[in-house]
Structure formats: C-alpha cells, structure tokens
Amino acid sequence: MDIEKSGPDPRDRTVAGSGEATVLAEPVWQLMLVCVGCGGVGGWLLTLLAELWLSLPWVPMKGPARLLTSVPEPWLTVGAVVVGLALGVLVGFIAVYESLTARISDSGVVLTIRDADQEFTHDEIALACRDGKQLVLVAPDGGELARERCGLPWRRLAEAFAAHGYDWGAPQGS
Image 1: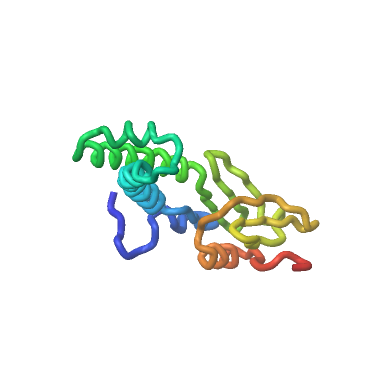
Image 2 (image 1 turned 90 degrees about the vertical axis):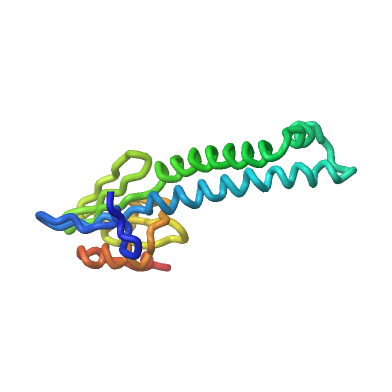
C-alpha cells in the first residue's frame, strides 16, 4: 500500500461516481503510533517507578515492585518495553474500532463507529454541528439524530458538510 507522506490520510477521500461522497476517517497509523509509543514508554517508565517505589520507606505494598526489580537487566527493561508495546497495540486496535468514519454525500450521511452504520438522508438533517468533542446531527424538528465522539478535523468536516449542501454551525438557541 502506497501512502503519501505529506498528503492527506488515504482513508479521507472523495469517492467518484454518482453523487460523489466525501469519506473522513481518523488515520489508523496515527492512532496506532500514539498507542504503541505510549505503551513502550510506559513500560520503560514502570521499571523506573518500581525502583523509586522501593526507595521510599513510607510506600505500602512493596511486593510487586520487589518482584519486578528482581528481574536482571537488560531483561527487565526489554521485557517491560515489550509488554508495554503489546498493550499499546491492543489499545490501538480498540481506538481504531471506536473511531468515527463519516461518509457525506449529497443524498445522505453515514456515520460508522464500532462496525455499526447510522444512515441519514439529506432531508432528515437540518443541521450538522460540533458540541465540544462530539459531532451532532440535528433533525428539522430540533431533535438530535446522532451524537458521536469525533476526533476528525473539524474544519475538514465542516467543509465536507457544506460542500454537500448541509448547514454547519451552532444549534438554534446557542
């Protein structure tokens, strides 16, 4: 798979064909890199914290820290980093699974999260807006159609909704 280093995420695209749709998704590589990196660093920091834990006379439950520091170096650091990386991969897969993908077209919007699709026709959506870190789709009667945690770039999301004829902005009365 070829990925442009300086271009947009390959999952963010316009699908050619009838009614061209814009698909926005959180970059998988970015989610995984953050989770795996934090896991590896966390594993390494755990070894340092275990040594600090043992050096403090007032700290309770020193057993787990003694057990951890009883492993000889370099195996302690290597093992802790590997376990941290493995946990980072697991958390990364969960983050990808929980991330939002929005497919916006002239005829409707499809929000996909946790392998479940929520489909809305253009007529069902009076307004798309941001509320904190959530994407909200509002019905013509003012009721909420959808409210999902969203890590997508807000500017690009607003541009995609506007390009397909949806109103983007603050809900009425805000």
